[in-house]
Image (cartoon, rainbow, N blue to C red; front, side, top):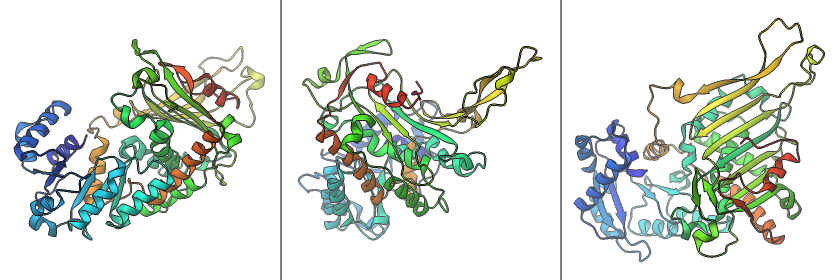
Length: 467
């Protein structure tokens, strides 16, 4: 994602002429050898109409290489020497490493004089593995870089449809007056994956779906969907409202997790017509790690009092999708009950984030006819396909937006320290409650929508998952 995104920004003239990219890794490598690796990656991952050899040559000319062994804390002086006079210009350091290395790398940069007042640092999630470790990571990085120079990346926030949630809510009078407990019955957020471990064995086992997906992506989606209107779209205003929302999440107790949470782990099955092994078989050992989690959450504030938010994510699901469903309440009185329409379906809105990007609203409409045998009403969909509505616009990789914002210093789509800690506080309470009641994952067949108890979780309230 990184070099193709930087290439696209270069191709579109969005990178300053003097901007240099210095790549780093543990391996000793000549600059030309690394440039060859990048060229091969560009040819493989870019769309055919985007790859241009001449443009690639100019892009590769920006790239240099310096070996750094972060664990051994060596190579930072070599990096400083390579930077040379460029140390006088702003520097952005992008870390795509395990979170345990964030602090040591920040200290190494600082000791080499690369953590200047105008320097920035970006870190990919996760930021720690619980509240205590996230605070330690933030403190270590914060000792070298000021908070307004720290960019914590959640790539979901770079997706066009996630950003479009802000426009949907706050640029349309049609929705915001109804965006509350008076009009909305419940909200569903689903992030489903068809993949299994896919080479992430060493990372995923012991982490699980709750920390891998809910703690960051899903809680960020929840915050954007449910937060109060910010005063502006400035980074401070938007993130202030997200923090307030995250702090309003009701913590789940030991009693709550028995009825408000489900842990699952996929067994052997079939996805997309292909047989797949179970999680334990892929791992090679029995494990207590959850690959599926469903939660029923409440937000304790005026806007959302009593409205359940159902969160669901899992691996080896029947199909890949990320969506938000807003289920509205039914009309208070059915005036058509005596003329042939005894039941009216409540309105709903489905916001698809991936793989397709669209917004669908279900409304009731009268079926054409003379109505001699009574009025016939049926639900119809109003569809807004973003790919069709903006057919002339190139759909950008989320990292393009995030990298450009990082280069320009705009923190709006990055996660602030107090956001991360508020998310971990809620997640840690769930994990502590799970441990206290010794909750183990329930088995579900790969290619299904998770354990049957996840269906019961929502159907007890008279609702159903949008499958």
